[in-house]
Length: 311
Length: 291
Image 1 (cartoon, chains in turn green, red):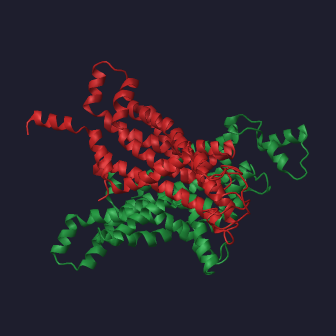
Image 2 (image 1 turned 60 degrees about the vertical axis):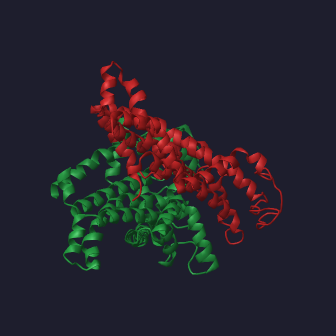
């Protein structure tokens, strides 16, 4: 297991390297001079050639591109992601301030999608061809086709404006997390339900299930001990992907529910052309996504020992 | 059955016709096709079908749906029905164009990586892996950050964000096709690699690509509308569904219809593409059908 984990971590290095290259490239392909933008964004920013040159020197923009990349990479490795043009605050501090609400939302969304998707998929498989099955398939189509912002607005209309049960915006208290998490959860639950359904159908046809029935295991015990455990494996493998979907989904959800977070910060930084902030936040989200996938892969190998030896 | 009988059978029912028959027997695909034809028709004939021009001020602002304005009027007094109908043009064009932007480079990269193999494959595969390390909306956001907000830039961004998926899909199909005897035969009779790829490998890997591209049109429309909702895509006064929903967001309590109808429009178009895509998959690859 140790060797497998080490191997997977080593595989991450080239991926993260190329990710850092892509993110670094944002600042360089841009039309215009980041130093000029920074001065324009500064309060009372009178742009003189001296000030511009001094800032260019300070930001390292006069160095050769390879040196700039090296500085960016070494900075990122020790947590120095530069300074926001608009807020004049370290990018890392701004990300860390908003990390908790974004992670809460992504995790709550993931939990919602599992709580809804797994049982729905299970019942659909066990009652194949019945109304729950038909409902699950329609639900999964709806989930895959509904815009996140639209579902969010529908939930606000119903639960905040009509029923008055939940707050329509903000991030204080668990009640403000319910609708955003439900929005992300419902959108993704369909995929999980569909996957769980087909996986359980596959498992139900396996020899070990027939053996279990033949030796007289009660159906519930058989399902709990052999059925669900094996059927969950494909669901676990896509958890990393789902977590990425959740993180990406926070970009829109945080805007719909006016929640503070990294996603909303990225959107406003793009609109305000705050490039160091965009660069830092995107790098941070990507590294989080890659790491989540690594953790899921390790979890998967632990659940299914065959994986460790196949690769 | 004799060889002649098998040949006769194959002649009577060519694979394309069998696929078409399976597609036409697919209930979901029919529903999808009806929805799709309706939306495409509305988009093409928007000027003739819509009661008003999309940006014409026709009545009092925020009028609820009524006989005069079936879907009500928006915050400025424009007819919502006309705006939703005209919005179909933008969303459908966005869907198709971004698929093209993703498919052409993606398929080329996948073909080259899969067919040439070796170091070329290793380099392309690493780049694909790295691009897949970004959730596609984040990748699209990076590109928008570079190009600036706007509907054309959204098409480019959504397209490029899907390049790695096309590349991975094509590479996989090419690796499988390369091992087939017909590729070896084409090589032995003196064809060169580009011709073999274009004439023999690509057509034989097109089934999964067609299915993926169809589903991708729907998801491009979703992502594109999401970006416009965030203010990064279409700009006012364009009648774009995502933007219209964003404009209606703050008026949700007083005028629910402004955000709701554009959202429903997106939902029905995307469902249409998903249903047709699933129908195509079942028709082109019956083994992949849902159990």
